Length: 409
Image 1 (tube, rainbow, N blue to C red):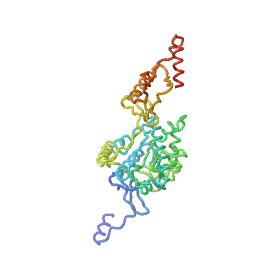
Image 2 (image 1 turned 180 degrees about the vertical axis):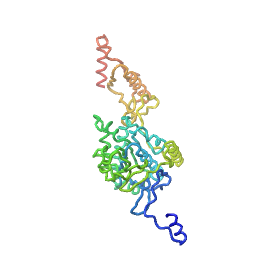
Image 3 (image 1 turned 120 degrees about the horizontal axis):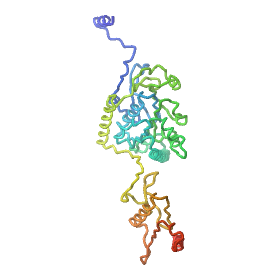
Image 4 (image 1 turned 90 degrees about the vertical axis):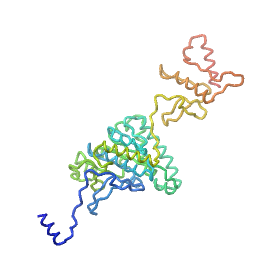
């Protein structure tokens, strides 16, 4: 029947009628098919718009949408969506500078992004030291930017770039893959401010160009304190029909959907992948190629979030304003020193590093010239190791007098 109708239409020279439905979205979509949006917008996927009878790229605009959540059950494409968004944003890093940080609580799915110069670190979720250091870095950045932006005034990063002329100010995007595991690690840890810092940053970050992208298997995993500051949801296949209802998505729209098929603002979308392949190996190769191209264009590496080293060569210790440097600070990995004056006490249990600390203190004092002897060549520093060993000995009173004199000096 269909062939007969088509033959008759061709014989009569009739135009092909408009189809009353859209061509189905592709099951695997190459990111290269999506345009580099330019400006703050980031292309993520192709969406079907039945009302307009068209397919168009979905663009995430961090200036207006702020933070984004990717929700879906295991195997639905959450990690792919995160990678695609960051890779898509990195494509335009030459025109729109970008720093990316990832907290991977989902088994290493973000690892391939580490090759990009735009990525300052992909941090394992259990690495509390680096996670805390990242949050401190972000809070300090947000505080600094809030002062500078309000002085112009500028309400977004794009405003600031335009008004100030400082087009090199980078946008910062932070991805947390696996919110359930992140919460169990940090939300109720005694004395830890990581989760409170996250809530604060999600509240104020949009105005200063700091944005968060969270992934979870359902919306209930994201607490209300964070959810209130999420302006956009990407809903992939979920495990329960109730979960769809909470998000206002029809329960059957993603039934038997391929990985990467999602609903955004009522429209069905297919998330793109770099390299146009479902193979992680091929995606990784494509990510490396993008990284190489970005470096060739002169994209500077984003500041790294390093670990505090267990061994630091003395030759690598810088100065600390005339103080005798003994190591680096955990908070910012900058040199930390002690003023070589008065009485300095080094204490700790057996084999904790007391002797090493004393040696370092003496060597950096001599190296940096932070303590010189008075006229006449008398020593300006006296070191007493294991002072407690003099207790009960004939030298106890002399040592005590020496310590008392040093304390007053």
